[in-house]
Every structure is written in structure tokens, then in C-alpha cells.
Amino acid sequence: METTNEELRELTLLEKIENDPDVNQSVLATQLGVAVGTVNWHLKRLIAKGYVKAARAERKKLRYIITPEGIALRARLAVDYVEKTFSIYRKTRQRVKEHLARVNEAGFDRVRILGKGDVVDICRLTCIEQGITVVTDKHVPVLQVDGFKVQLKMKEAE
Image: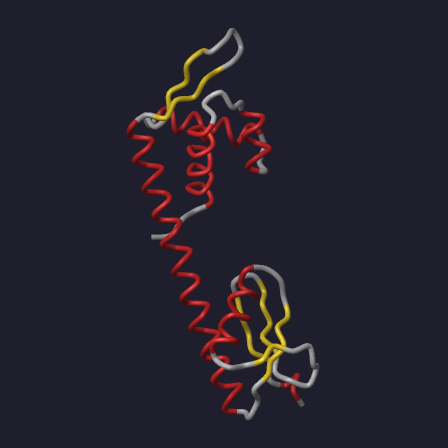
């Protein structure tokens, strides 16, 4: 099951509201890195579906309360997110292992890794596990990381 950005936002909103029922939409928008209107839209949906209730705390201030159905939704969304994350991790490790097998077949025991982010860390750990040294030498094969995509570039080694 694929976790969408919408589901991830809803999970984050439910967690933030659970931690602080008095949090306002402006603070939520800042924490999520989205517009206040986006937070408002999500909250209205969550309220309409019965996952969150809004109660007046003061004249202009609302308090958000997660319903038991909302707690169940948060748990389901969290499990879905973890499952998707582990699936990406496993697929990335398998892809890197396949690339490293080609590196070994070509007679190399070192690679260079280019890119940024968590996928680079997965590549580095997989290299250690496979006995491949990560170096900065420009005359070895390259694992090029772009987002979740990992490509092997052998011609760099020529």
C-alpha cells in the first residue's frame, strides 16, 4: 500500500494535535511546511470524517480533539508509512547489491558514491556489508544517487 503525501500530512497533523490539542493552524502550517489553507483543508476533512473534533477553547481559539476513530486512523497511517519505508529500504539495498556484484565482476573492490540523502547512507552501509570500500578516487566505478534512484556508472573507472 502506497503512502501518499496527503496521508503523510494527515498522520503528521494527527500526531501534532495529539501532542498539543491547543495548537493553531498557523503553527501546524509552519511545522508541516505548507500553507495555512492546506492545513485548514486537511482539518476540515478529518473533522468531516469524524477523526477530529473542534471545540471552542476561547472566543477565537479552537481546541482539536482526536476521536477514537482518529487514533485508529493515526495507527493505520503510521503502520502504512513504516511498511512503505522498509519496502523502499529493502529494494534500494537489493539494487545496490546487484550493482556491487557487477563492480566485483569488473575486478573492482572500491566505489565512489555521489549524491545526498538517506539513500547514500544505505549505499554506504551496503558497501561495507559487501566488502567494498567507499573512496573519493575518480578512477573507480560510481554509484550515482538521485532521490531514490541508484545508478552504477562503470565508464567513470576508465
